[in-house]
Amino acid sequence: MKQIFGSDVLQIQPCQNGFIFVIKQEERDDKAVVTYKMMDFERMTIAPVTRNVYLLEKFGNLFERFDDKPDDFLNLRTLMLPDRKLLTVDQKGAATVTASDGGRLLRADLTYNGCAPDCLVAGPTCFFASYPEAGAVIRYHAGTLRREMRVGGGGAPMPRPEGLYYQNGQLLICMPTLHKVMELNAKTLELQDYETFEEPVHRYLKYNANEIVLLDSGAYKL
Image (cartoon, rainbow, N blue to C red; front, side, top):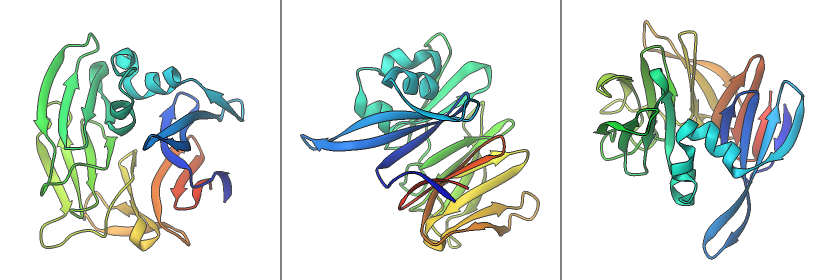
């Protein structure tokens, strides 16, 4: 593994040619001052980018409505749905689907056992959400936001699932308490080891053949 940034990484946002890292610089008036750096795998460079570049990747063409709300744009979970629709979920689990023209199409409550989702990832006609405190991963219908399937939770919780990654029918789940990224078998719904680390792993992302993980000690390229 090669370390890219240290433990001051707050978020990793996928972008067109790689990832944008949100990095904490300092605390000022009980708020974090952040900077944004893009890792471009097409040019193999790491360079500073503006806040608007980050906002555009996170919120699409609706980014301007979030520009003056730093608490919102850093804390909101977002996902691009089919037909350029934007799904946003706040820290209380309140979800909103917005059309590309800015019109609100749907609202829903995505909490599970009183917990808001930690990570969202898109599937073919669905999306998955992780719930660390509730020990569950839930699949939702992308058009209706209705719950379709749940793994874990209830009397058989998973060990604190956090970051999710989905590609070609493969769902990977970060399990920080186990120091593992695990793969969910879509047919049997059983978990198997995908990658093991020496410390907690919170996010796993991939751009082409380039794998990135966020551990307690920082962001690494595998």
